[in-house]
Image 1: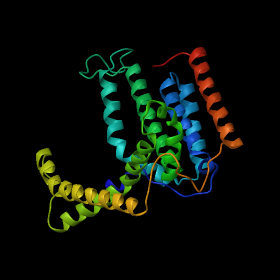
Image 2: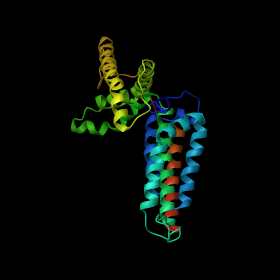
Image 3: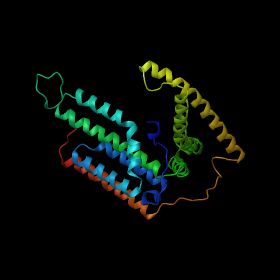
Image 4: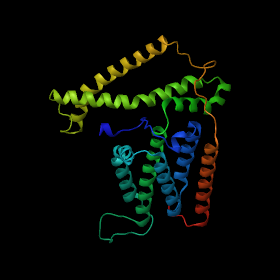
Length: 272
């Protein structure tokens, strides 16, 4: 399960999505997430799913990696869907009155919409990191947050911190997997017993992980100092990102999609 977490990973490919400006990709991701929560009927849901499938195909990211990004949240999706399925009492009851379980048609639809929303949200966020390098993400965050410099917010430092944290997620996951394998080789039982036993079994994993994390952070800070790294004004870039025609076209497409979802919500019956 640890190896299935793909947050922060980058997949190198030559696709139109990879070539989009990182600033545009962040804006598109935020707009898409907003659209996910705007949908109120199956027509809008179809538009969202179709858009996500088309984007995934254009990104050339392997379907296996998309599944890996979903696998860690399967339990959360099922758990939240079941909760809403049983606790949503509005609508027509789908089971005989003699049954002690109450499942309504609105509860079933809402649970389905919630599950699809979570899955599409995770896939859209994963596509952003799959198709954008950490360096490009740093540049994009700096540019998008640059207005905050007017109120003395250290935008450059903030962007660097966010990008480094995102970049080190795969590294820490790999380190955790190595520590767990080493503890299992020493006879540690990490998969049986009750909740309390499993929590106690995590202590031999968390302590080495924290030590390794602090060591890596110290090595990174030392390496940045040795290379005279400075963040902020006056720092130049080898590659200058510029907005191109394909970026403008992507913005137009997301605006059209948003407009279409609003119109679908207006002219078609809401199911949630």
